[in-house]
Length: 428
Image 1 (cartoon, rainbow, N blue to C red):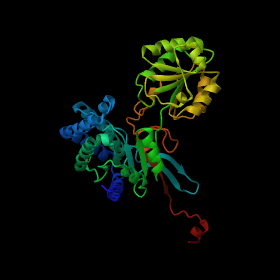
Image 2: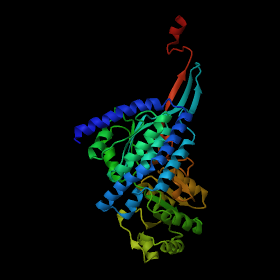
Image 3: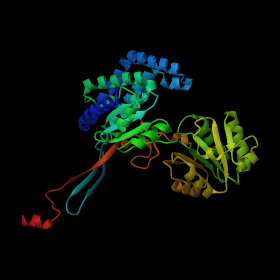
Image 4: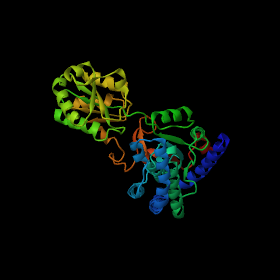
């Protein structure tokens, strides 16, 4: 397709999505739950078509030489489709955030002011590889009253189209507005440029993928962007830490699933305990095949550690590699984290509650833990039921983003004829 044809097609989708968003905002919680359950059932009944589409993506991926890990992320089977459908049904049972009164104020002049949670409107989501994101993003937007336009990566285009079709066609008989869930059916780069520039119809855009994708969207977007850059997460082991607890938390944070954004990448250790703690930590991590990259003080204590470079302090390894640094005190740990972190998740391990309070108040990250694994930086673990992603922004959403973070708010003001110029009212 030409750039002009892509532009026209996406703007047409935007206009349809805007109309759908208005209709979605009027749906009751009960109706939305009914629609979602119908969508889950449709996904299950459409499994044969989805699996056939997925075969095309897998064959193309193998031809392109995608890694086994990438192919596994792409692969669907009956069990995975059933799990995606089950996730839709779980979202259907979550509390509906739309219409919740956040604040209520009565002014001295009799005016009543309510702050009420409302949908954002039309949300664009650009993502890579995983076809399950098509469903996850669509149903979370629907539950929060938003229409969505999805743009997936080329690796999963056939799977994404089949899933989006099953969701929209399955939901319409139950009352889903036409165009509430739309997938851009082509993967030309021009589609990202057009979607990011369509501020006439799009209220928010969320890129989910690698740093290159996110930077591209940020550079092009003419509407707000909620982004998640690197997950460079830190653990600081204080001089008053329980060392066994510290080893367990670091082991879990680094090795339970090293390829995720809330896995640990850097460990800071107080100099007073470094000589006793680091050999114990190295012994545990060696059993997990973790490579240690240390500063000069760490390498002196652990001669087998690889000397760290300056780049190691700002690297998201997403692998069984971790950088280690000995720091003089809490102040140095806080300074290092605030300079090198991606503002995702950090943890202090200590029995000193005052040190923990300082750490949590002075670290500028979305999630700041005390004696808890950073692997809990997750919407489901926070009790949100589901999440659209994790934001490292500060406005309007930060950290795990659930249904409430896919909403804005509105002030609703009621009175009985109050005028700014009270003299006019008395004159009448």
